[in-house]
Image 1 (cartoon, helix red, strand yellow):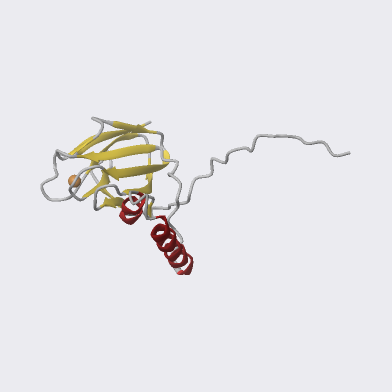
Image 2: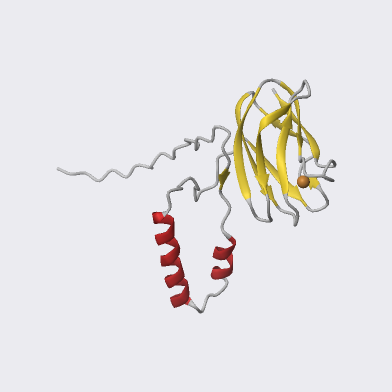
Length: 161
Ligand SMILES: [Cu+2]
């Protein structure tokens, strides 16, 4: 006899593999502008269909639609500054997700405790963009910077324990 068992689906905490590669998780600007056109549903449906066809036809399917389970969330704000005076993380593979909330292009680089600029970086070129990357870090105080000329004020410690 069949019995209906209602079990909660376990939510997976599997994190997208980034391995230093950037992943764009921001919503395309076109989606925002389309969303505001509430009365033009036919147009929206038609365009959405075209977009999904284009997405299916593309060879690059690396853009996830859900937020990345980041270890460190960094926001670039207007006024050439990060949203926090300092950040912290646990040693290992640390996923940093950076969002550009300002009107200027930025990037995220890490300087190791011994002063070396790490190869891994994140570029957040325009407002609303969120990207992430995995940084391999060990215990110590790193420095999170933006290397865009004139942005030297964008500097915050990343304390790794
Ligand atoms: Cu910057």
